[in-house]
Amino acid sequence: MEDLKNKLQKNKGSVITLSVIILIFLVLWYLGKGEEPLLNLGERVTIEEIDGAKLLVELERLKSLNQIDGEFLQSPLFKSLVDSQVQVSAQPIGRKNPFSPPAFD
Image (cartoon, rainbow, N blue to C red; front, side):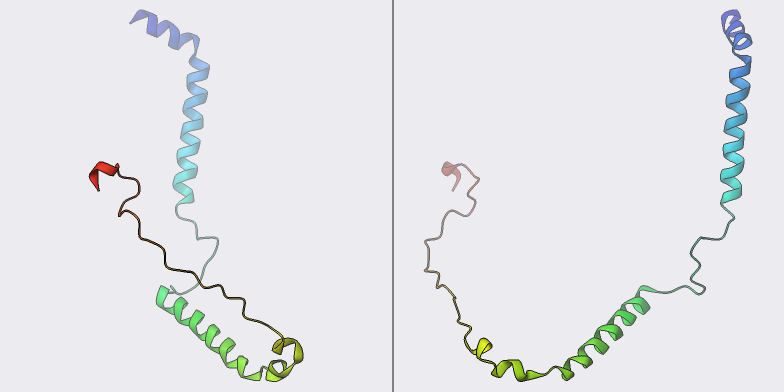
């Protein structure tokens, strides 16, 4: 017990400094809780309203598609395009779980 008192007496300045720093931190943290947020949206906005706004933006974008000129469909370059689709032949089906040992199939 006497040893602990001696250590506290020797490090009295460090203990006081640490206590003051902790106290300042707690006061600033407590005071910071009452501040207004950095971004104030005014009224609360629900997710449904945000989704609705996105939907309206996309609807307006789709409405503007009727102004596309379809002349490019008649161009020789478009008509020269060739379908390079490759047919995939049927393959035999393997095991249900390829990672299980063969004895457990």
